[in-house]
Each structure stands twice: as structure tokens, then as C-alpha cells.
Image 1: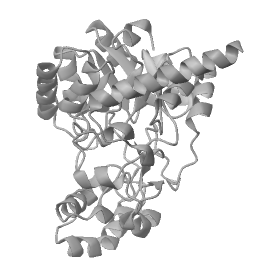
Image 2 (image 1 turned 90 degrees about the horizontal axis):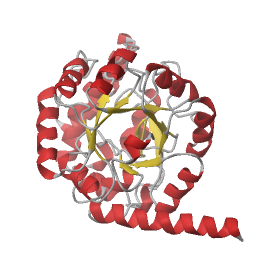
Image 3 (image 1 turned 120 degrees about the vertical axis):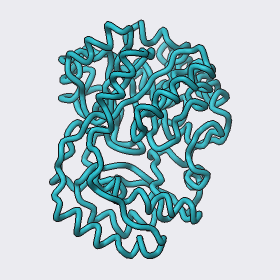
Image 4 (image 1 turned 30 degrees about the horizontal axis):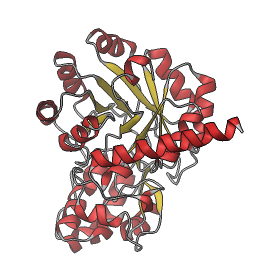
Length: 359
């Protein structure tokens, strides 16, 4: 990251903006106060709710923080395929006694309204998921004093971010939990994942662009942070590691499932949202993942009620349990303490690498 961005926090540790309720003001404030960079997730929220969370966060910490926006999505959905999937989920609706959702919801996540708020009431950092804004947007945010980050999954996406004027890129490896932040979802891809591992992707992006890199994907320990810094990143972004913290807004069932032997692994699936996302393998993914079409956010709307009903029924087998590949290494502790532990582990690993190089 440019010095202006790295100077925002003592440690090169970024808390990932996890949409759906996990990344709220309490978590972001705890991370920022401990020396990391906390993030609010504006995805799936109304502009008014985003604004209120920013106000709450400013009341909790004087430290810098970031806000993440979802980019508007072009329609790739085949309406016929969505209807077939609706029919397949009829049994789920009956089981949880809840109707399936309306798939005609907005595809832009109120992007323009949220952006207008962030230009009128600037925050230190804004990051973007599922695409890259225009140069005019970056110019406006720069004029407002905001630093910008674009999440990328390929060198070509990183080049687009550099050309458009981003200050940094968040390089997301295939190991990452939650949605893959591809700029264009290929409707003909099966969603099971042909992406690149984080360390390889860092090297590819370093050779493609001059922008600073925030590394994301499966990072759970300070030693891993040291490894991505050695590979060329200037900071590390962690999501799953913070999910189990008491300040996280994740559902208690989700938190417990991360280290539950009943959920030993993850996979990429379109089952819950219509876009490839990594989550703990449960019954819903096994039964519906192979048949879910490429239709985001239509499938997200379709399954929203099912996911809420499953959570209310205490049934993690019907929930979207987003998690990175390192989920079994999750440690339940306050977010501020976790930042301190990660920083200590990182420094120990870096010192070890330095001693090894000197010997």
C-alpha cells in the first residue's frame, strides 16, 4: 500500500469487510483501536443503514477505518434456469415453512446512493468488490481525501484497477472465504473454482502492476502474514480469523461451525447466491450446489428467507456458513487481542526469517 495508507495503522493487518452482518461497528472499532485497519461492510445494506453504521463507528473509535462497497452487477441470469432452481428449492421452503424470495430485486446494491454519502461524508478508505469503478469515481474520492482499494482475483483485474486510478489492490486468493470478487462472473463456469492460490497470485500481480498489494485468502496466523509480506504484499486482510470474535456480528451457529468437526472442509458454491463463494460444506451445498445457476444476486434474493429460517431454527445445515480454507485455526478471543497476537506472531516469524537469511 502507499505510505499514506500504511500509515493509517501501526500493523499491516486489515479486517476483511464481511457482508451479511459480521463486520459491524463494534468489530471494526476493536480492530482499529488495536492497531489494525477495521472495515465496515456496506454490501446488502441500505444507504441509510450504512450511514448510521459509519456514525456509530466514529462514536466508538477515533482511529482510521474503511468502508466496502459492492459494484453494480450486469445481468447474467437465465430466467428459465432461475425458475428451475426455484422449483428445486420448493422442498426447502416447505421444510422451513417460509416462502422463497422475489428474484426481481435491485442488482446495483444502491451503489450510487452509497457513493454519494461517502463523497459528502468522506471516510479514510473505501474498497470495492465485484468490479472496478471508473476513473471519475476514483478522482472524486481522491479529491475528498479518501484512499481507494479494489479487490482483484487476476493480474488483468489488477491492471484495470491501476489504469482506473486505484491506490491499491486487495489480491484475493482462491483460499478466501465468502464470495470470490471476480469482476465478471462467467455464467458458463461451474463455480467450483479454477482460481489461483494466494502466494502465486501475489507474484503474478506484482509483475503486472505497480500498485501496493493487500493479500487476502485463508490467512489465520501471524506467520502467514509474514509470508505474504515476504512475497511482496504490504498488508494482509483476514476475515474468517475475526468471525469468531465476540465483536463479530456473525450468527452464533456460524461461529461454532468454524471449528466443529461436523464441518471439516469448504468448497466454492453458487448454491446460496448464484455467485461462487467459499463456505463450509453442509447439507444445502451438497444437495443444491451442483444445480445452482450463475444468477447473482437473483439466487441471493431467492434463498434469503431460507437462510434466515434455518438460522432461526438452529439448523446450520441450511445456512450459508462462509469460511476460508483455514477455518479450523480460528481462535475465539476479543478482536483487539487477536490483532495483538497476530502482530506478535508476525514479528516472531519475520525475525526468524531474518536470522535464517543471515546465517
